[in-house]
Amino acid sequence: MSDFATRITTLVDAEAPPIDIEELVRRLESGADIVGTSPVRRQRRATNWAVAVGAAIVVFVMIGGFAWLIGGTGPDVIDEPTPTTAAIPSTTAPASTTDATVTIEVAGWDTVLADTRAKVPPASATCSSDNSPRVPGPSDQARPEARWVGNLAGAFDRHTGRIVYVDVTGETWTFDVCTNTWHRVEPNGTPVPAEALYDGAGEPSGALGRTVYDVDSDVTVSLGYDRVSVYDATTNTWERRAYPYPTSEMGAGPHGGVYDPVSGLIVTSFYSPDDGEVWDLWAYNVDVDEWTELGPVTVDRDPPCCTQIDLLGYSADLDRLILVTPFDRGAATFLVDPRTGEMTIIPGTSVPIVDLGWPSKVFGQANGTVYVYGGAGRALCGFDADTLSWACHNTPAEVPAKYAAFAAVTDDPINNRLTMINGVHGEWWRDATDDVWAVELSTGQWSEILAPTTP
Image (cartoon, rainbow, N blue to C red; front, top):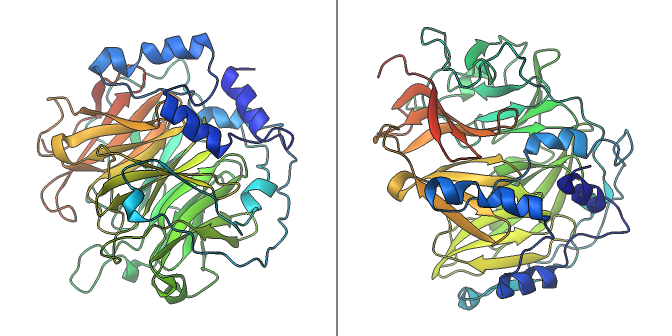
């Protein structure tokens, strides 16, 4: 069993709790490693981004490895969580403390993510010996509509080995990472009704929401603004579901979405304006269509309104959710323990704020961490679990300079790379190019794996 597999197995063992929050901060302040890594892992990290681009973005074991790492660590069925009636407090960190690391303990956090264990997932796909994943796909192939859909428009299905992508017209496509080809799948059903795709001015409505692949349930979940939709690749079918409460009660959202490999549940966030500018994290169990409110993640602000907290990803090495937010005095990264709600707030000027309500960047999960693309210098930034900081490098010259973002950023664990779909430029809702790029996570090298139909 690999070092990473051993740590994940330990993580789901009730007798071995995850990293203590005080130890997390102590190691941050001392500059020590956050997790005990073997010399092999240290050597592998040293040969990655630091050598290729002079900026270290830690490369972890592929997130696709969860298919083997989690299997066998829990029962074949998801444990039913015990409902809690404890009041959820509104715990905040004062803005005056944003110049130093802050640790906050949260009382009343729901324990569903600690009590539930992921099922044994299906086997992960691999490329055959006949495939050439680093050879660009045929340029004359049919493709999805290139225009911007919204953050997390695509998700990698580890069972089929394809990226599931829903374009701005509501069409469902899959991208085969072994052959670099698009396939229009023409499923039964759609994630949202056709009339909800565009607003009164004919612009994309954003109703498609965020897309997350639920590994142990083997379905792709679309977290729209007024519904949940579930895509089963085995039956090629979309099933629409409703939120348990009216969206006016839950507030704006969902914002972000991430699969938790320990519990097998999806975590997302909603904005609750009626509760005093609170961003609440929720867990979704797709198997039983059940939502659980975990608790709030919020900070005092000046001014107090309209600065959101973005849920971007999950660090398997730390067993922490990764969130970012701008303060009145700068930006910060939140590391939230999904089992207890404890927060470590780390200030830093290099924090890549995405602003999911009105996106300025795009992001995607890969290699057990999260990557953010866009902004000044069109930088690609990855969260480094060893240093608890963001490491960034600029986009190479061969990527068109007009690209401010991509329509989707997804992982490709089969080929250990990050996939960037459709270059976005000009007016995000209107201007895009239908090319596909890949970033090798072992070297940081970019390559065009599907040329645009129109340069």
